[in-house]
Length: 322
Image (tube, rainbow, N blue to C red; front, top):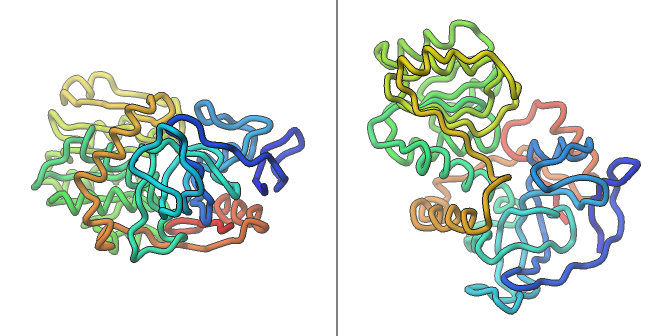
């Protein structure tokens, strides 16, 4: 089968053996894939948890049809339209655990469905499960113009946040954050952004920050969080190491939580998918929660898709079709 593989000489579309499902696995005929920042790193040889490296089929999220089910897979059958996340998505066929997929709503095409699995699971877990956002509270999404960031804004608004703030360093994308639920948009590269957040929250700071940036904003986040507030660290696009004001962290008694899918067991991941289904799935089916598609590329042009992502001028998801 055709697949996008990282090899000794870089990435290329090549033929690889078609996988077969075992145990609780499901074999999916992939029709569309969403691109993610971790994919970009893996095209350069970086590992993402256990994924990546020479010989790896790349890709992390997909939509398609169930082709075959393993002997212990439950609640799913051949022909079902599904979307999900997992390794080796940029291929004609991929394997997924039966608990790591969603049924695709009938009012959604493959390209639209491929934008959602990672954003929904990552940000429901960050905003609701770990962030414990309650109606009437305030939230700041750092890196809000990414696909997962746009979803975080929408989930925060759906869950009743009274003040939703999003950050972006790009003026055009910052200007569009209100379309996705932001009441205020700030530039995290502007030294004055903390003062803007404090002003918007009556001097107290936000109840919750969902941080995809860290790096130099780590201590600024502490100053922008209210006493006994929460910070959920989801990503580190701005750097993995930086100054951290331990005194401010202690003085504000901030609950600082780190999350990643890379060290989660399959049981934990299944639980995250279940929580999305139980809590916000009606909003997905009604299209209240959705992401814009910036551009769609055919698999033969996947190199151009990654060039488009690396240029970092897109808003929403980049999709590859097979």
